[in-house]
Image (cartoon, rainbow over all chains, first blue to last red; front, side, top):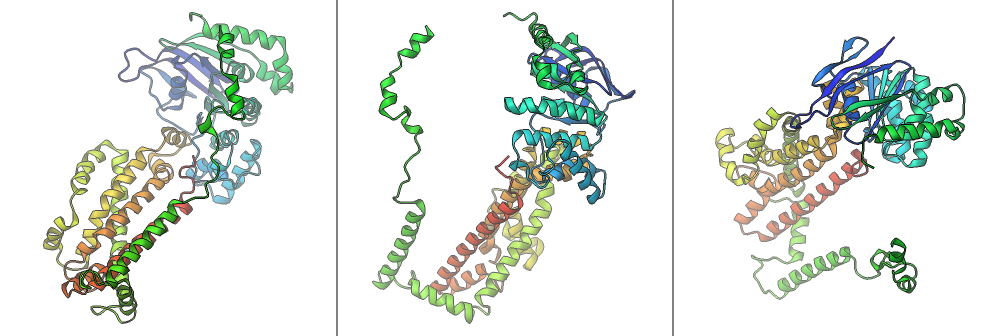
Amino acid sequence: MPHLVLDKISIHYDGQPAPAVEHVSIGVDKDDFVVLVGRSGCGKTSLLNVAAGLVAPARGTASINGQPITGPGSDRAVVFQSDALFPWLTARENVAFALRLRGVRPAERARRADELLALVKLGDAGDKRIWELSGGMRQRVGLARALAAEPEFLLLDEPLGALDALTRERMQTTLLDLWTASHAGVLMVTHGIEEALVLATRIVVLAPGPGRVVRTFEPGFSRRYASGEAIRAIKADPAFAAARGELTDAIFEGEAA
Amino acid sequence: MTISFYTERPVSRTDETNGLSVPWSRPRPKRTGVSARMVSAVTILAVLALWTLSARLQLVSPVFLPSPLAVWNKFVMVTSDGFVDATLLQHVVASLGRVFAALVAAVLVGVPVGLAIGISTVGRGIFDPLLEFLRPIPPLAYLPLVIIWFGIGEPSKILVIAIAMLAPVALSTASGVRGVSRERINAARSLGATRVQVVRHVILPSALPSILTGLRIALGAGWSTLVAAELVAATRGLGFMIQSAAQFLVTDVVVMGILVIAAIAFVLEFTIRRIERVLVPWAGRE
């Protein structure tokens, strides 16, 4: 079973008096959708960057399938809050970027890119330039681009953070559909409490000063969506409201009201 | 408390201004008066008129200021018959050839140097002081040294122009490279790009708008170095033409040459702006 493991990770940035994250362990299985939530400064993005290989931990080990993580790799594609797309390429060429790096022939990578664009419901936007797309469309191109690398894990750093509320709402189901279709494990960072509940198979609540795990939830609403239940019905479920209250309490626990 | 605060606001003012209480937020009615372009046109015409008038009234000797008509006639004559053994077109081609040869050299050296400055600390340590040393030196100052080292042939002329172009190209490239967003690079690396691929597929294209701006500045700098470069042992070129004319006090050719240099600079600037729009349409739209 492919497995992404952060084992007793501490992160200490140069010039900072205190560690940003201390002694955090998180494991992501191939069929997991793990969401990190917590107040600002709890180190959730730092942890994601350790998994991505962009930040080296001060102590502890990050590994994928038993191999230590020493740098970024296409087995762990990252999607950032700002889309970080390449404006000199069309939407299709952006999606095909990982394939181009590997020397896949142009016809083949265009075909594959179009498949992925169709998967994120942008089937007719392949020839569009990035600046012609809305924020939500860009983020979907970003997701398709990450999937093109055929990663074992998707690392999402507040991928819906810069979108308006209505687009966010719709992108949540897109994310779940992609998670089901791609068979990639997901590790995601978000500020959205409802978003975390809808998407996650497991929610890890972090607290700041230094960043540490305070609670873990296994909400199970995303599995309900995956087995065919409508997202609106799930959100209307009293159990959903109860879970939201509980998660909110956990996030703000220990903070003066 | 909050409520009383709001009712205290002068409601009547809003009514006065038809629902817009902030006068400066209203879209201005389209002014039918003067535009900057018109003022520029009038200014140019006024200068021409003054010039014509002073020449017609013979306020100054034609040796100092030939009439516009005389300059125009010289333009026609030099275009067809030539001056100092070459037609105007041949002078222009010689000068443009030098400037473009220098541009190619400046890009071949300047872009990699700029990349090195932008990417690596060692690169910055090596090239930054050298460029800062080179940048403020006027071409006429290093011209003698270039001639001592490389002789009076064509390479020296191109080199003088290229040195003037090097700093703008390299520094613009470096600032473009430093401006590449961290997330864009990280995204590419997490998609499996090696360091070389990141430079080739992410950093260079990201820096392209800045590099093109550098080329535009460099062309301006190079073109204004032209006369200096053609000071020594040239037989063709606009700078050479002006200097020869000056030695024989053929002032109308001097003035004509200056105007041609200005016109070509304008065309170059305009052309490279068009190229920018075609090549980097995303600049300023991200």
